[in-house]
Length: 339
Ligand code: 5GP
Ligand code: MN
Image 1 (cartoon, rainbow, N blue to C red):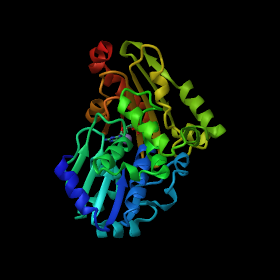
Image 2: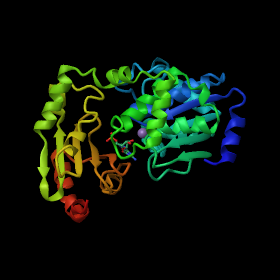
Image 3: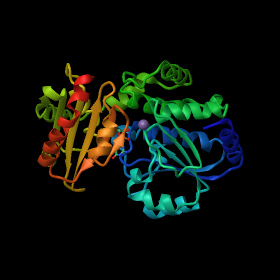
Image 4: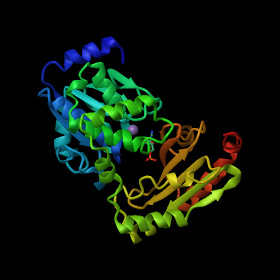
């Protein structure tokens, strides 16, 4: 996004517009945080702004200021379709290809609103008029801060916006510990705290509201953990039956994949989660160093993401998916052992 783009966006936003903000399916902290921070920002300028999530977000994100205003496409389809078709500007945040929005793919591709993409995933599609795409960024929330900075308007970031931005930076950096965390990330976090983001409260709201059943489900996933030392890989799985046993709710498996990576000498971790309703196995992959799970997921699991964190899906059974994963590892043996 160059100076000229910023001037044009400033011009566009200088009069009230009908704006829709969308993000990816199964929205995470960065998706919801970035969408709501931008919602609060644009609302200050009298734009008529609506955030539409493709499907519902987990309950540990529902406290984020403004969450009560969002539409969920799968529940409020008609109203969402109308707002998308009437929108003058659509911001697409934390994703870069329409198919990542599930059922919103068609209305988004049919809309002739001007599109502004702000995103940090690899290989962006070309649908946006203005594109702020940077894979080196920790999070879309960090990019929203930079975007407002480019508009020379960080003075207008208040405690509410700072709270939303803090959530996404915190969740996408694994609480500031992943490789994507830079000194700039920390500088921005410091500014957000100065503006009123309550760091310990936010951490508590997101991470310390576990149910007993969620911890039991985590225990089940840890019991299922297997190690393949020759591939420096750890993987686990949760069957639909196990999910049902512990009364699985959206978001309950968030972060579970990371435990595999905490093992000494392991550079690739995977979790396979059976979803009988959608008839797929959801896959999450995490890695350390240069080993790209984004490439692995694009090549074998209908997905993508970042170098060290990616997702995908399989249409095989849970067991077949795991067998397939293990057979695929052979071709990555050298790469995994070179790390
Ligand atoms: P998770 O494993 O937490 O679902 O996702 C890890 C990262 O990969 C996130 O940044 C997420 O947006 C991305 N991701 C997850 N699933 C997919 C997918 O199916 N396609 C693509 N392109 N990215 C995905
Ligand atoms: Mn993100």
